[in-house]
Length: 319
Length: 281
Image 1 (cartoon, one colour):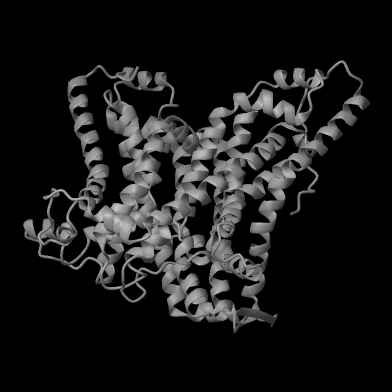
Image 2 (tube, one colour; image 1 turned 60 degrees about the vertical axis):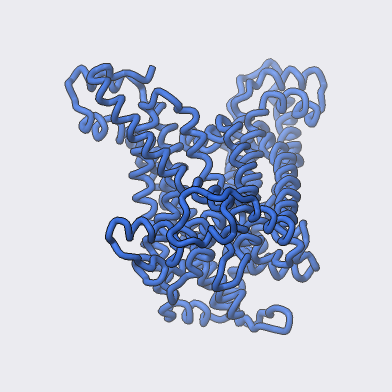
């Protein structure tokens, strides 16, 4: 891990003590050594278990990987894994699906989550209970959530079909065709994650100074204007962070479609992570699979760096 | 403090209450459906039209899940993996979080940024190399095959949470301990830790929940029946054509309720952990 970047700025600005400067320097060096000593068990473990595989996956993605009796072996550099990937219709669809899914679910979750937060902020009875209730979907095992929705969507005894037929809407097979299957997947995701967004937004909401609202009220602003002129601008950093968390999560989407739709029908609900998983663990196409996995990770890292940069410069210009 | 708009209060109050009730229903109905179905008779789980209330009330599904199937074992496996990984994360994370928060280490911000990057890194990118590594050392289908990766993957987030808590503790206390000649581990143990309990709690609950719900690595490394965790057991239960939902939900209720109760009791620290990033930037 490269940790040697000289970064003197970080030396804490301690008040000059009565001690002599040189003595202080020696003391500080001792403390720094102690710091590395204390953090090394954690840092070494993290490096061994995460950084090694990350490098290995990158190497796999640019090598000829052949499946052997009990695994695979690497031989020679090649660009063919990436070219296979780029030319595969499945990959292009998975990329489109992952991006589309991420954009739609995050947009809906942020909209509903903000609405829920606004409601909870004004709620006078049972607020603590509602907060606790919001945490339950967040803490639920995604695989269980997927099975639960699979039961709700079941075409022969599912509750949703029963409700639809009572409403005179027939009995659709939700997971059988592409568009309803994607919508069904999104609903299950929105149920599980909107509460998480609501909790984060609520935390931002209670930080907004009261006098802003009082000033707006004096000026005779109505609720709608107050929201767009005061609440929303003040909430922007919080919402931005919630969006970042959710985008990163949604981009690695795996558990929910793996159980609920197995990526189907066909590969219409197959995100990048399932494509990579199937390529490597099912079809033993290790090279192209590693290319998909590595490029997905790269997109996530570049995306979050860009986001942080834009976010920082925006926050800076507004401050 | 919250009724700042006394203006038209009654109207707002009603609207708020109705909306909150809708939110309540939105969350509770699917949960109710899972719990209610677990208590139906196995035949009634597949009744069409569906039974909206379990009648007759039955615990047969629980019997099937825990005495005819090995869901008890899956829960035990999940508990072992999650408890050991959480303990390791807290010990290593406290030491590292203290060092990175309090000690004048050159380059620590680089380390912190790298840790942040690792904590958002998609698991899929590392699963196959880790699989190969674990296979080569003969650790596939074992507890350590999950404990070690979970510890490493959830440490970065825990270090960040703990560091934020350590930063908030007044510096004078540890300086006076140092002047009194206490060694660093002693300082952490008797000065820092007692004040950082909420942080340890938050980091602990987060790590535990993450381990409890993790699926991709558990599916890739531990598919042998004896080492399956709950998510893997729940995902792979049944055949491709029939899913025995009654059994599944009985097991799920047992897997979900303890965590829900835990989160419910410690909701304050969970909320503060969830929002630490959002509020502190």
